[in-house]
Structure formats: structure tokens, C-alpha cells
Length: 559
Image (cartoon, rainbow, N blue to C red):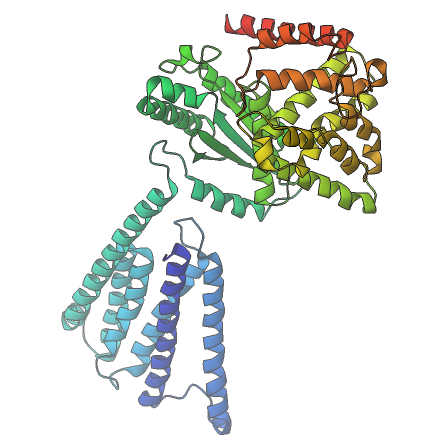
């Protein structure tokens, strides 16, 4: 594809070549006119100095040309000082040739067409006509000087054809240049704009993200907000895709009108992005909260039939360099924050926070820990449910720990254990993890090994050794009927008992490929029924109270 940068480069290659030809004509005019720009006593060195001067002028033009290429990608319509050099240089050369050649070169007046052509092709019709008028003035002055005794009217009359021709060239070439600029601008707008929402499209967003990353530093952070419409598939299924398109269009207009400090774009489907150069995480969170409230307050057709009684959005935020040192990392972490927001409750703003950012690792452990993080990423790719599940388990576990008033240090360990409790699934084939039917005896025996495999994996990092027992026993039952070792009651670590409850609850209310989900009320009844057998009775009561409190709050908000 012929890009704008390639077009600019090709254009200025032609202009630079024109300048070099002007220099060549300048030299020829001197030679044919019998003029010598060097004093007589330099005569033995004329050839060497002449060549040196020619080389020096050529080098200056090449340097200007390279500089121009470096700024050719600028978006401003205003001329830079280099543009003026490109315009003035051929004018000076053309006028010099005209006056040096006198009448020794026939039709030397034609050289004045060069600055007009260059000016009109670079800047357009009006500057082209202005340059034609300026060249006409020089031509008239030349006629008055050469033809002694000629008045200004006689001079104009003698070069009228040249004056007319120069203005026609300036008008015609400049007009074509103006049309080409307008057409190019229109095509650029079409290429960069999402036709439905009027926002920038995914391609333009990626280009700007790469551009902004060139200047990212601690003093100049870059924040990214990814916005996703909650339950949008449900809305499309209920009211049709035309109504869904109208929602996207309204949301696009809201973002365009209210987000003025950054770049807003449609990322794809029902997802939008906001790039905030120079904004830190706190500013990005404020912006996202404003967007969330703005959408909540907007009236959408059929919005009252959506879960929660209105159309809402969830937002994930990441900031560079804190959360990523590359565009890919920044998008990945913002997407992780978004998925957490949608996994926990929706209609929520989440800033990316790594569960493990407080870990202090030595050089040897860092490699092992990075390997564990890689394993988590692989599990997420094999079974996308696992990621949202781990985030929700972490959230529920921390809430239960806070009710128990556990020390902050212990809660941090519980976070690690909750997030990594399924890391052993890396050893299990994706077919088993996503099998739609009932597992056979062999498949079930493989699945039951994942707590042991996960425990072994985290032991490679000394600070994660304390949670290895939690991961090992998180499928043990209170009455001793669980796996892998069948221990019971208080023999099961407290954190493992906590994860056992919240893990089961989340599995019950989640719609998975091999089973239909329960309602929260049905899941609570199941936990009550299994209290004392599968679950610690005391922990079960506290957890049920937490869920009931959250359900009551949501009911109050909807009402």
C-alpha cells in the first residue's frame, strides 16, 4: 500500500532533484555567460574550488532533504521552516540565473517557472499565484534593467506572455495540489474512522499507541482504558442488531463529546478504548468513572430490560510504564483488568493490580516465578473460564478473610493461594478441562491430581512455599471425603477450607460447557446442605452472610 510517508518521501525526492538541476543550470549559465565568480589570482584553483562549491551546495540540499523526510510525517498543515527553504531556494537560483545570463541565453525567462511549480505543488493554489506574481515582478525589473529607457508599461507588455503563463501554471498546478490534499485528507479520515460510531478505528488506535510509547516515561505516563458494554449479546438477542448498532452509535457520540483529553476509538464489537497520554492511573480511574456514570445516566431503548435495569459498561485500566513497557503489555494488562471487572460484578471500573506485585524475589527465584506466570497465561488460553474463576475466588476469599479479621500479611498469602489454586491444571489436557460430558474414571483420576501438581509447581519460589499446602488441600472435604489425601476438619489448613467454599460457590453459579449454572440462592442452599460434610460449618455461615449482604445491596440498587 502506498502510504503517506512514502508519498512525502517520493515528493521531496523529486523536489530535491529539481533543486540539483537548478544548481546545474546556475553553473551552466555562469559558464555560457562568460562570468567568473572567483578573483583572477585564484585562477589556477578555479576548477577545484568550483567543484568544492558545487559539492558543498549539493550537500546542503541533501541535508535539508534528509531533515525534511524526518518531519514529513507531521500532521500539521502549517509550513515548517524547511518548507520555506524549499520554496525560497529555487526562487533565488532562478532569479540569479535570469540576471546573470542577461541575453546570452535565449528564453532564460523560462527558469522562473521552476519556483512557481515547486511552490504551487507544495503549498497549493494561492501561494502558487503569489509566487507567480513575485516572479513576474522580478521579470519586469529584469526587462527594465536590460532594456535601457524602457518604462514599466513597456516592460510588462514585452513579457506579458511569460507573466500570463506563470500565473496559469501557479493556478493550475496549485489547484491540482489543493484537490489532491483534500482527497488525501478524505481518504485518510475514512481509513482512520469507524463508520458506525464516528470514532477512530482499531488500526488508528494501534498506530497512536505505538507513537505515544516513544515518549513514555515516569514523568509522562500513558494510560489505557478498555470499555466493554455489559450483557451486550443479551441486548442484541432481545432487540436485534439494528438496535444494538444504535447503542454503539450513541456510546460513540458520548465518548467523542465528553472525552477531550485523549484518543477514543472503537476497539472491536462492543469494546471501546481511550488513550490518555500524560495521564496517571488516578486520572484514568476518574475518567473511567465519569464514563461509567455517563452511560448509566443515558437513556437507551430497551435498557430497562437489561440486568440491573439499564445499559452499563465495565472498564479496565492499565498505565505505562507502571503496568507495561510495551504496547502489547499495556493492552494485555488493561484487558486483564476489564475481565476482572466483568468477572466480579460488571458496571465496574478496575485498575490493573497484580496479585504478586508485593513479592520480593532474588535473582534465582525470579526466573521460576516468571515461569509460573507463564503457566497461568497458558492455562487461561486453554480454559478462559479459569482466569475469571481465579479472580473471583481471590475476591471472595479476601472478603471472607476480612470478616475473620485475619492479619494483612496472612490475607496477602491467601491472595497468592487463591489466584494460583488451579495452576496444576497446566498438566491436564484441554479436552478434559472442557469436556461437555461426564468424565470417565481415568479422566477423573487425572483431574484429581491437579492440587498435587500445583503444590509442587509453587514450591520453586521460597515466598510461595507457605501456600503450597493450601493448594494441595483445597479440594479436601470437612468430613474427610475429599482429595488428594482425605484429611478432615481442623487438619485442613484454614486457607484451604476458605478456598474450598468459595471455589465451590463460584463453580455452582458459573455457566460452564458441561453444566448449567445455579442461581445464587440455589448455590447458597447447596452450601447449607453440605455444611459440615464438604465445608467448614463456621466458615460456611460467614460466607453465606457475605453473599446475602451483596445480594441485598444489588436488589436495593436496582430498586
